[in-house]
Amino acid sequence: MTYATVMVSLAIDQPNEARLAVAGQLAERFDAGLIGIAAAVFSPPLYYTTGEQAQILIDQGEASIKRRMSELEAQFREAAKNRAKQIEWRCAIDFPARYVLQAARSADIIVSGGHSDAFSDPFALVTPKDLVMEAGRPLLVVPDSVDWLDLRSMLVAWKDTPEARRAIVASLPMLRKAKDVTVAEIVEAGGSQPAAVARVRDVLTWLSRHGVSASELVAEQNQDQDAPVQLDAMAADVGAGVVVAGAYGHSRFRELILGGMTQHLITQTARCVLLSH
Image (cartoon, rainbow, N blue to C red):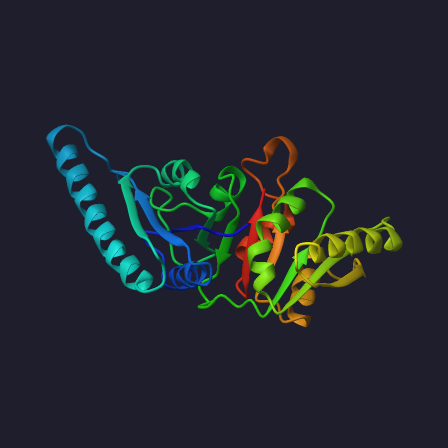
């Protein structure tokens, strides 16, 4: 398994430098093709009018989006230069989530930005929350503070769920290139430490059969910290540049509301996170 095609989702009104840098490095490391993609629709102001004046306003808005798309294409091509064996640019006047999710079939992995303090027009941005639950592809979330793909150490946040199993399979190409890999599980209240150790060791054995040597880290949940904070501390302790995790939703509402750990992982700013649902 490898990443033959990397897709990077760009934002109209947010910084794109970090995600472009990491996507380019990912394509270079795996000799992959690279697709840059962006979409937006004009969102009329609250004082929206009708008739000829409305059409003028729409035309001006769409012209502005097209100019920004041209700028993004130039930025993408410059960032991808000499990194990917094939480069492709896709853009459209369309709802961003719909357009990117349809195009996800063309890629093995999607690179997206993480949390940004910049104001974003919801008609001009596809968020990690949009992508991770629906794309059917692993998502690499890149915070704006991260400007390179650090594979010296990777942490697999293990939980015995289908989502975590899919995430570790999706991350195998990166895990094979990592210098150090740690599989960690936080034992929830009422859980069994020996059972958690047995689960993690099964994962280590599975990884070894795929050419990945990994170490185990099993810890009882700290009553003074919630699980996301404890996972951050684990990742910092092992110097993880990438965390691998399953993405979880809340039962019937999972299309709208992500679980606490997943929400934390897509908004933290310290490292890249590979998520799969």
